[in-house]
Length: 398
Image 1 (tube, rainbow, N blue to C red):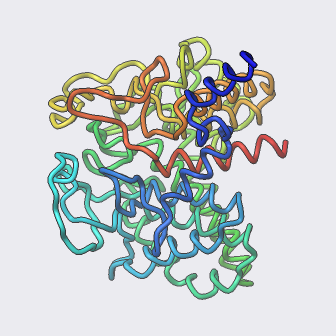
Image 2 (cartoon, rainbow, N blue to C red):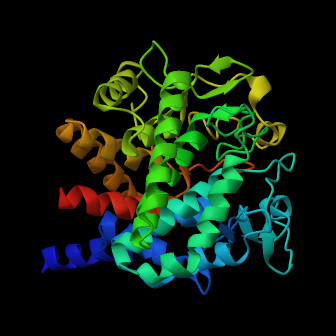
């Protein structure tokens, strides 16, 4: 009788909704909790808008669990608001994100936004990611009619990107704070963006063939090979990884985890380079404690946005951990002969999700969600929920 009472007492102390769910179920629940009529919100609080990067990466998770309707809605939203020159919005929602981050209650009609909030720079990767996400949707859902209906939009988007080749060398350029690491003043040719560009061209090969246009598929294939060659010639360093960005012929040799991991997973790096990148991460201990660092070493203070400095999150895109990047790390390990290490990393990620019962935006190095005086981690967070859902499925299938 005493044991029964003790058992009931323990159950009352543990929230049933958390205790009953494993990490995969939590990631799926959090992803689906952000579904809206027109797609996937980036988050439930300060990022309660449709953000191209967040929402489009999240569709990899939606497609993995068969929620094709939401992926299609998300793609359609951005396609419908492509502007006359071919650019997709980088965000669709409340106009002033700064007011939202300050916690001010604003009630504005949702609208497309094409520039970053910092310095109004034009981002590039939203065009790349929409094409990549469209390919993933078409291949997995077998909705070829979607590709036929929107192929002209995809072509307009890819040629908009081609017009950003300021150096006429098959690489695209961007201005300050234009990339996803928008707390860091990168400009010129950025690794992450150009890896996305290469992958978008490969997606155009698949989409061209899906609609029965083999001549165009061959053109995009040749185009992708030229971009592939340029990335490897211009970014690869003797240290055994790709430079973070190149500007005015200066190579900024920071290690960007996002760009290097996507280079592995999206076919920019060959097997030798992939192993070199992963060994560099091991040597520099980029995965110690919880998750992996976003960049190494720390960016110079002069490169960090003053807004992030004032908010006490100057490490937002350096030491702070993002689960979607950590999941990409496990996938890269698994695909390059480090299966046991991948399973160990995956176990840590899942344990952390189960510990906190939710997928958060950003984490401290000890695995706790960021909870600082001026900034608290968004939760749930679609980008990481989606990528975790996708990678959990991929590694389970392997």
